[in-house]
Image (cartoon, rainbow, N blue to C red; front, side, top):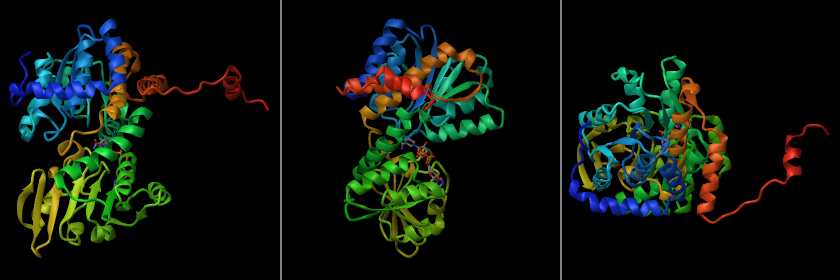
Length: 416
Ligand code: NAI
């Protein structure tokens, strides 16, 4: 089975403090931890996790371990792994294969190390592990009971596999649960993206023009928080309905070709590739800031930036300056990787309490119901969403009303 591979085990005390801090702000996971410790739903099982390896993820891994599993974790992005957290997690008895700044081949090797543990269950973020067991590691398919997927981009990949008839296991689309995308994608990405951009640049947002490309769940949050910071916000979309939503929410909408000329900050959140590319770089203002909060680092075309630039240098930690032939400078944050995780600590703990509460319960669901789930991408049962919501409200000390018997009956009736 081997032992963990982390950058520096001596960083563990700092990582432990970070995990302790978030665990105090994640009461939903705290309740689930109590449940798991008592009932041991994963006794004797192996769980492979590929998530952004920061403190909230470490706490989730520990909760699943407390449920009886042997857990192995890899980071889902080379720039989001925090080495002190990785060290602390490894010290706590979870197998960890990750370090920040992993090169492409190291990153892939870490995913394989996690799969070498021969997991029964998988938690994925972007579908890398599930893709690998359907391609290079097919021998594992007979053992894996199922998986849970964290993000929109992962769901896109899984649905593509399902449509082609090649997805051989059940995968719960945790991203699609209400308590995930309504809050994590919107309020989590909204706040954390600006946290990352402000930490990276130390620049003011008020009075600037912010261009948000993609007005899905994440884009809505990024645009909303940019407005709150005092920016003028322009939204670029390809979907006409999302464009109307942006207009009704009070934002300017125009094609990126036009917005590129006026933006001070650009944020991509589409889940698509080459969204900001050469033709846009050609018309941007000097010192425009480029950031991505979508899952992969393909939304801002780095090949086009490399082609157009006459020089490139790091001007602040996490800020690269590309100088174009006419002297304009474009500043790319965090190598075009998710800026909220690469330049900050990711979503707030209270938001990830909802997402990871769902992950923990969905994993148990796959474990208990695996064989009857069949194969394909599955929704999160409504009761699970409601359980997480109720635990979260309780953690915040908020009570809500309930239906009277007559009201419940009225809502079920159809006669006049
Ligand atoms: P979504 O599907 O709700 O929204 C994406 C929007 O982008 C859609 O409205 C679509 O029409 C638009 N779009 C697609 N191609 C475009 C193009 N070329 N130009 C303009 N608009 C375009 O997806 P969601 O949930 O907002 O996620 C977006 C990305 O963010 C995904 O990659 C997802 O995995 C990732 N994500 C990142 C998080 C983070 O922590 N940074 C958290 C959650 C999701």
